[in-house]
Structure formats: C-alpha cells, structure tokens
Length: 401
Image (cartoon, rainbow, N blue to C red; front, top):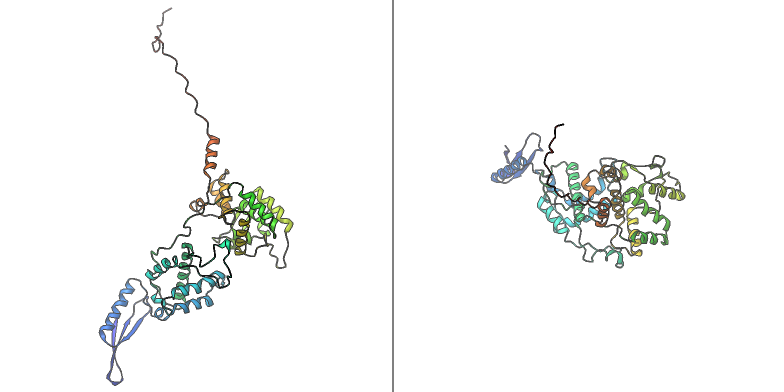
C-alpha cells in the first residue's frame, strides 16, 4: 500500500506527499495540494505496478526527439562496440520527424501502443519525399520520391524495429521501465509482402551477358559477377565482401565468415565446377592492396553502387523488373533441379529452415512437366483373356493303372 504524508508549509499551507515503495520496484513519490488527488495517484501507480506497466516519471520528462539525438551520439552495439550504422543515421532523424509531426515535444511516456500502431498504418500511406539533391526525375527509378510512391510495408517494419531499439536503449540508459505491453501484439508488416518469383526467361540471360560485355566500364567483370552469383547462390553482401583467402580451391569450398552473412553465422559453401572456372578467370584480375584485403570483386564499393549499376544494365538489356538478388533465386532454383537434398541445398545457400528456402523455389510449370514426362511411361496394355472351355475348372479323372 502507498503512504500519504501531510507536510505543513510556511504560512500555514498544507501539502500531501504520496509515496509508493515496493520490493524490486523503483520508489515513486509525488506532492499534491489535496489528499484526494494524492490517494488517486497512489492507487493508479499501484494498479500499473500490478499490471507490469511503466510507472517511471523519468519517461514523463524525456523528449523523444532528444532521446533520438542522444541515441545517435551514444549508442554502441553490444558486440564490438560499433556506433550507429549509416542506415540508422539516416532512419533515426526521419523517425523522429515523423513521430513529432503533431507534437514536437512528445515525451517518451506518451508513446503508447495505440500510437505505435497508428504510426505504422499512417506511414504506409505517407508519400516518400523528394531527395534534396535530386535535380530531375530518372526514368529508371519511377520518378523517385514524390511520384505517388508511399512507404512500403517492409520500410514501415524497419522503422518499427528502429523505434523499439531506441526506446529499449533509452530505458536502460535513463533507468526506467517500459510498459510490458508496449510492443505486445502490434501488427507489424511482414518482411516479404509478396515474395518475388522472377527468374531469367527465354534469352534474357544471353541478353544480360551481352549487355554486360558491351558496358563502357567493367564489361568482363560484370559477366563474372553475374555468373558467380548464379553459380554460388550467394547474397550480394557475401559476394562484395568476399576475399581470396576465404576460398579453398583444392578443397572446393568457400568459407564465408559470420560477419559477411545475413544471420551472422559462418558457413562453408561448396564450389561447383562453374564456380571454380569463374574463380580461375577472376585470378587474372587479382591484385593485392596495401592493407592485405584481397577482394574478389573490388570494382563495386558497396551494395548500393552495385544495385544502381545493375538496374542500368538490365535497362540496356531491355529486361524488365529484374534485380541482382533475383540471380540468387535463379541459382537456387537450378540447385533444386539437381539430385541434391533440401538439407544440402540449405548448406549451400545459408538458409536455416526449409520454409524460407521454399520462397526461392521458382520452378516453371514446363520444368516440372519435363521431369514428370522424363520418368513417365505408358501403361502396358492388358493381355486379352483366353476364352473359357467346357472342361475348364473340372478335375481330371484319374484312371487306375
């Protein structure tokens, strides 16, 4: 139970100090002018404690925009101690601006579950703003922002988890307890709203390679990275960060470090004959930099550079709606057409469960039909029955000798 203490002030004024002290909880106290208000506050705090809700007054004074600014300055990853990533430095100011649109001084305690749900819903209807550096619309990017595009469900999902990360960090830094139900049951958009099923069709692979070889810059290198992505089924990040020291060519294995993988788990992928042939070609361009990091593909500095360049490449090849990651889809689907088991394919691709792997299975109907027809043989015609005779089924009489 909370206690209420009467305090006499100078001049005869009386105030009432309500105090809540429970084992394992942060003590709470507040001063009121009348006893009824003090009792009401104490009862409300006790109910919140019983429900495991936030009862800290620290969160009532912290401005969300200030917390976001402090997060960018002070946050360090638990493992490695690295500061905020480049993506976070872009997202956090936008998140703060979005959340502070109606109330620039919104407090952390005022961010409720319903407000978070409303934010996710409104964000998916919010137009993507124009870039400040943009001078004109680019035909390959659907006019960029401001052209009627709104934030996708996947983007809303990223902002939700960034908000959750900021609030969790603030609760530990400023020593207050978040509402236990703050993030419970929130309808977060799926990571894959519509799983892609795009594969190379017809002569698209030949056209893509032709456009690559005719590029003004890195023509031969473009061909190698495209075929390498298909042959190894590796992700873009794994390919761009790959170094020669990771490859055991005599052992036909690629040892991918955990820092290069999506799920931060190291894996060993087998090198197929096409992959080994491509590595032999790449060896002609091998250069050892001063820092000792021998990148396999040093011609593209990051995934953003490669993605934009690949989009221009597909435009020259007149191939619509084809992304670099679709090369991984193509490679995985080709693995399904071999005699490998699902477990062996998962070892190659780095998937941890078969349901995720199934997203990349894009067998064409004609491919499935060809497999069935290759093993199909027409049923044998039934042999005609011999006509029954009069003596059929009768036992022969045995004549004694």
